[in-house]
Figure 1 (tube, rainbow, N blue to C red):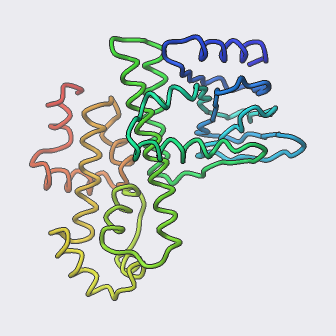
Figure 2 (cartoon, one colour; figure 1 turned 60 degrees about the vertical axis):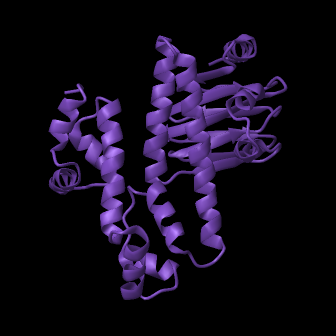
Length: 285
């Protein structure tokens, strides 16, 4: 995308009733002269980008969010295998999304990523990466097709993205502040359910021996650690089966199962039907 086209993108953001734009052009982006109150960031799905700002050049890997500092002249060169979304929005767009004091904290935390004269990128865990990929794909589709209610859908997905990024930062902060409690463990599972971990690892984070940790976890949640994990995974899989045309195998992989037989077994145990029966019931099969 050349500088003229990017300027047109800025104008589109500034003049639109929906001051938000998402692009997926895998080319060299010239990012200069960004108008005031306009922000941009990149969701890098695959490949690498060389990011130059001031006199520094950095190589940014895939599976990350890259914030472009406001009002800074920058250049981004993409590798041949690049897959990305380039998001441009006006600050007022976020202010119209969230209006409570608590929600304002989410916005302030999100906008802090656009600090001037700094390289700020967030490397994503697999669980967060898959969730964001789905959300950005949906946003891009809604913007392209402009079906009834597309503005509301885009706004709701952006809210979800901001909350996910805020939660990931919150989990990282918890890791630095000492021992976890059972609430921290369930929160971690809720946001990292595709990742593999052991009972000993979770017990160690809480400063407890595995036997006592297991008893305490079941007292607090009513189920064992891995029963809780499987319930979360199956719950997330139901959402994907309901809302997308992903194959059952890809859904199983997306929620953390490496074995389709295990996925089918736990799904039937929890939902009293097979994934195929559930998908057929939703009308997507």
